[in-house]
Length: 92
Image 1 (tube, one colour):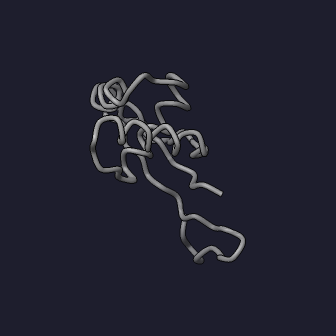
Image 2 (tube, helix red, strand yellow):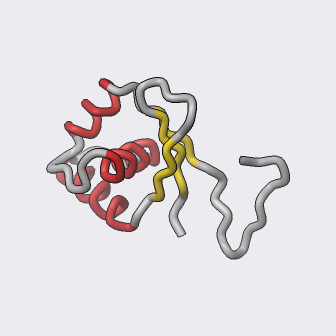
Image 3 (cartoon, helix red, strand yellow):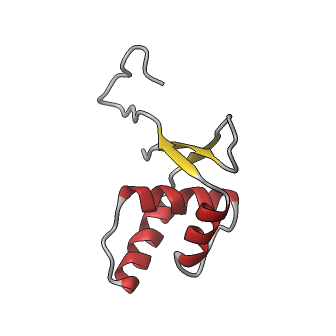
């Protein structure tokens, strides 16, 4: 199970919930390989937000970065609770 993200766009106080999909991970790794750059979790999070909220199949990372800058996108990962973990009391 992938993480759930809280995405804030244009200074919103309430987040939009986005689930990271396996295809987002595959696409992000492909983009990083093509650009010969290192992959970072924040980049995957932005790509997942972009694919869920704007365009499901961007051609590269340039429109993702442009969208994130123009709309002051903030992405926060929720605590991941898998089948072998339990939630920390009081954590959101």
